[in-house]
Length: 338
Image (cartoon, helix red, strand yellow):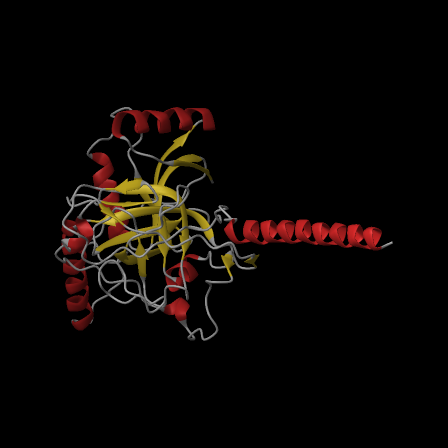
């Protein structure tokens, strides 16, 4: 009987030891398991305002959030916050100014094994793709420019555009357009081209869906100079009691011609809130325009100035023209039917 009891006790001890080892292994496994899933929102990382002197600055990215997504296209660790000021939709666009490019954010840098080379020249830049916005998670933090991020101002983050610079951003789904000041780097996600501030995204109409198809066009210094001159002239006309309506000022060639809206199939190169912005783009397109295609004209519709070429007899002929423009002049466009 003593031997049987002793054997039973040894069996119990052995079973306890095995259970203890198994539990320890499970705990260790749980502690060392890393969730490598990446959210579909932009992975952003704060780029230092003054990078190191090396040619490529390696920045440790913020680990991707694995929290559950909630309504509104953002995550629990980001979003609009609780105290949203009234009247943000009426916030004026950023006013473009000619500013010197900051040296620090102009150096090449590497994030998530991807090297980015910021733009430092004054060549035209137009980009189309999916854009997103960032909010309270970064509100109050320092941007790549050294400025403090304010989600309620008209700013944006771009991986390559100069800091600071200005961009005209159009929501290709609804035609809404804003001007923002580029003062930060990001988004660092293969499917995103730009991160808008909360207010900029609100004005573009994609706060609730989180991201949308955008067109980003850099406003170059020569255009900024023309905009400032136009503003000065507009102020003089207003002071003199004359009409400040851009459609009424035909003297001295200050206002480009605007065609009447017509039905048909067209190529569209953008929708602009200001007629002189549409004209600046039209002049830029004409520099590399194929001789056999209908020249782009400005059409006023829905409160916007749209740049159209056409009409074309069918969508097939319009697509052929679009392919030719892309091949010959690297001009990208979309086909619209009215």
